[in-house]
Length: 343
Ligand code: SAH
Image (cartoon, rainbow, N blue to C red; front, side):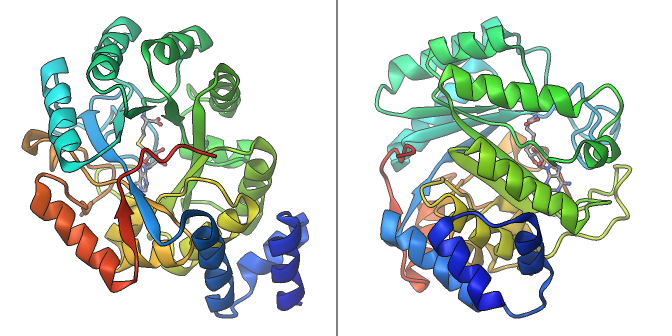
C-alpha cells in the first residue's frame, strides 16, 4: 500500500484525499518518502540551497491571531519598527554578504501605509536592480498589492494558515476571515507575484483531514513558494499551553509538497530549526531548498517573537553565514547565491 502510494505521488504528483490521509497517518518510518523528495529537489536544484535575507521590519500588529506572539493583545511584547534607512542598511549588509533576495516581513502595522511601504520597496528596487524583493505583510486590498508590485516587489508570502474554514475560525478572532485570506492569495497570483502560501503543522485543533485539505489546496492553487513549519507555543498567547507540532509530521509534509510541486521554492523554516537542533538540515534532507537567514538589526533581535525560544540562522556578518555554509557542508550541500526565482 505504502509503496504504491509513494509511487503514484512520484509519477502523478497528486493523490486522492484518502491516499494523502494514509500517508499522513501511517506510523511507518518515512525515510523513503524523505529520500524520494530529496532526490527530486536535487534533480532540479542540485545540492544547492537558496538563501533569502529576512528583514523583520515591525512587530506592531493590528491582528489578534491566537497563536502569534506579536498579536495586538500581547501587552508583554516590546514593540519596535525599523525606519526606511534602517531597512536599507539591512539590505546593504545583506548585499555585501551575497544575498540576492530581501524578504520584508512584519506584523500588520498600520504605520506602514501603502505609500510608505511602496516608497521603501522602490528605494530597494532602485539600489539593487539585480535582487528579488519579497514582501510578507499580511492582508491588503488588490489595489494595494498592485501598487506594491508596480513599486518593484516580485514575491509575496502569505500563509493561508489552514485550508479549512472551520479550523481557520478556531485560530483567529471573528474579525479575520478565511475568505479574505483566500481572496488575497488569488489577487497576489493574478497580479503576477511569485506567491507563497503555507500553514503551521500541529496548530491547535488541527486534524489530519485539515492537513489533507491543505495539501489539496496546494495542489489546485499551485503556489510558487510554500512556507510550512511546526506550530510552537508562545506563553503570552491564548495558545500558550498547547504542545508544539511534530518534527516528523513537518518533514513528511515537506516531502509530500516537494513531490507534488517539484519546482516549488520550499524553505526549511526558522520554526523547524527552533523545534530541533538539526531541524534546518533535516528539512533540507526532506526536500526543502531554501533557508532564510535573519538580516534584522540587533534592536529587532529578540522582539520579533512569534513563539518562544525562536532560533535564528543569523547573517549579522560573514561569519554567521559561514556557520550556515559549514552546516550545509556536513550534509553535502552548498549555498547558492543566485536570485533563485521560480521556474
Ligand atoms: N503578518 C504577516 C506575517 C506573519 S508571521 C502575515 O500575516 O502573513 C509569519 C508566519 O509565522 C505566520 O503566517 C504563521 O504561520 C507563523 N507563525 C505565527 N505564530 C506562530 C507560532 N506560534 N508558531 C509557529 N509559527 C507561527
